[in-house]
Image (tube, rainbow, N blue to C red; front, top):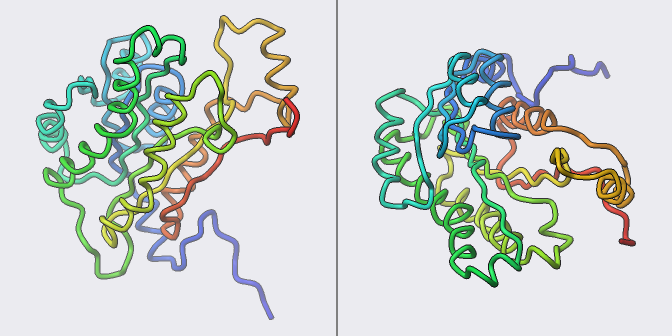
Amino acid sequence: MARPPATNSCNSSPEADAVTSRPQTVLITGVTRRVGAHLAEHLLAAGHRVIGSYRHETDALRALIDQGLIALELDLLERGRLAAFAGQVAEKTDRLDLIVHNASIWHRDEDVAAQPELATAMYTVHVTSPIELTEHLQRALPARKRDDGHADRQVVFMTDAHIDEGEPDHIHYIASKAAIQSSVRSLALRYAPHTRVNAIAPGLLMFHPEDDTDYRRNRLRRRLLPFEPGPGVVSQTIDYLMACPLINQAVIRLDTGRRWEN
């Protein structure tokens, strides 16, 4: 039997390919640095319309604005601002194809012990505000059921590969990321069939400039594939999720694998 022609996505028809290849309108929270900045730049270069939220202006943000980013200020700790922010997004576009909840804060357990409010802040930024913002955006820019059965919108949460492995010094951070990851199935049930909901769970992507040689060597030694992937793997995964309309309620783990021994 002859095999069907290969395609660059898992679409089931030429009509579906045409739909998913058109420019998309994307909202990314937290675009001022690292993964968020790279993803915004990647999607802008691919011809998509990108709206990005930020708390503080940076050189990276200004560079993205020069490339076409629509930048809107938002502090996810200010939950009372979420509805107004959704209204601002609706003023910039009449449709929203993809929401990437990328904004994140990171505090060690010793920091939380000294300032207990930091634990609440992590849960607000990683769990409560993203869920509430998704609701506000649905009210301001409703995704709708389509006649062809495809979802009209996709929501992607950035979580963490260490949820399954545990982190003894970052219990509160990992717990907050685990909480939003656990909501993926429930949110997909709430929004079906007009919206797909998935999560990307990165492990080691890139080191910080201040990470010394010994630290980097030790981190890589614990990986089955001992290399620093870089933020491009997130962009590749987002491209796949945008192109493949079948993926829903999934957690895609981006990790080079971890050895059993520490």
